[in-house]
Image 1 (cartoon, rainbow, N blue to C red):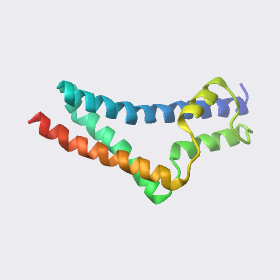
Image 2: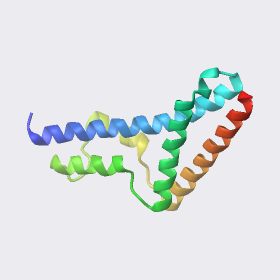
Image 3: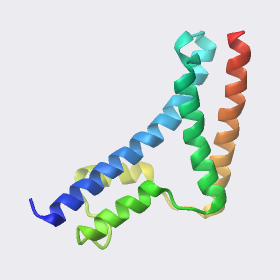
Image 4: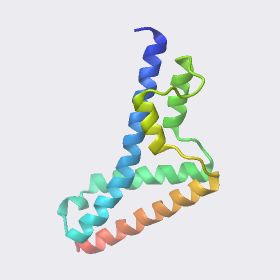
Length: 132
């Protein structure tokens, strides 16, 4: 395996990690809501809830500061080192990019991330009340 192939593989791995992060934030939130309604005890797990809250908090902070996600920056750097000027059409890359990335003005993303972050915080406090 040459360097370009290795960097391309690492870029694909970074994309999978990025996708998993998004899934954790979105699906985690849905499971928290469902768990509150269904009275699942595991959704009160402090480590899970703090990790989830921190994850969306980082996204909201980056959006407000106008910063690119470091996972995106790292993936792009790995692709550049692989000699790719843009994204190639590998299976993993094509489908994950279709789901993960879409075009909109930056304010749209900041608004969405902020709204989602507010919902996570509200559910955090709702979860504490339901536990009592």
